Image (cartoon, rainbow, N blue to C red):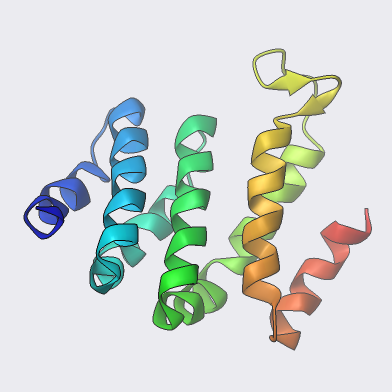
Length: 141
């Protein structure tokens, strides 16, 4: 069933409505956990979710990338090459963003997104000196 639904879910990851993209990303996570062979189909759509401004879509996109890295070494290399700079920039923007009551909890802007980004960066930086060097500045703040 997951193999039959994967093309539709992949198409919905590029849908205009952010709520549909968020739900499609959550569905993608379940699909790749059940059928890890389909991970390569979701690498490019997942990387496009990392450029989102909508926090709900961004947090599910980060979780999708994290799970892709766990099930596929090919996805791990792809995200190391193409997404680390963008992830570090996103983390820096969120850490330095002004007060936003929508995402603010106890003075920290979207701490759940912070945690998910740090978990993904930990996976991407493990065993890769270049990736670790790229992350050093933001982690020292």
